[in-house]
Length: 171
Image (cartoon, rainbow, N blue to C red; front, side):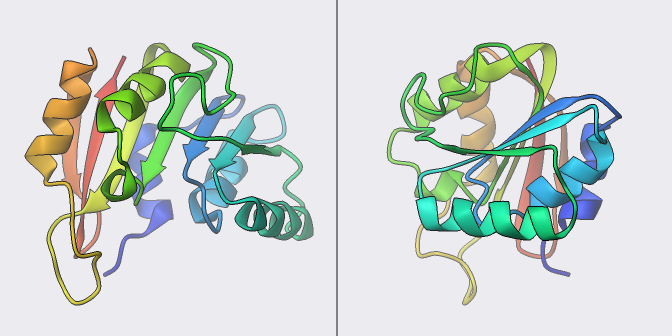
């Protein structure tokens, strides 16, 4: 099975009223599922550097009746670049983003910055180079070391589909 947002989000324990940041939201698969789980009193901030993807995400979310998604044009590779307030997120999702990052240390620090103390960051990325994957990937051990260096603690690792690994860190 390819990486499934609904299954992977079970690892985060999303509940009604939580604030979730989906970094590199892309087409919004994680944003939509998270928005359903946190309910009308919760909030999902869908962050991406591509404005066209955000406009599509906004439109699709509205057509699904999801009024708790806020799209944010931002850059997660800079400290403060997501434009998300410090320590706001109960949960952060970074799916299929790490392999694209040019400044991984700054990225990990930005994820920490926006996460509340005790909050969690879920990283999903490619587990190896295949015909489906990008040419370069960030190995699981390297991703774990990156976030631990930023001061986060690994809570769990899991298979996030046939071609992806998943890591959950606690701030």
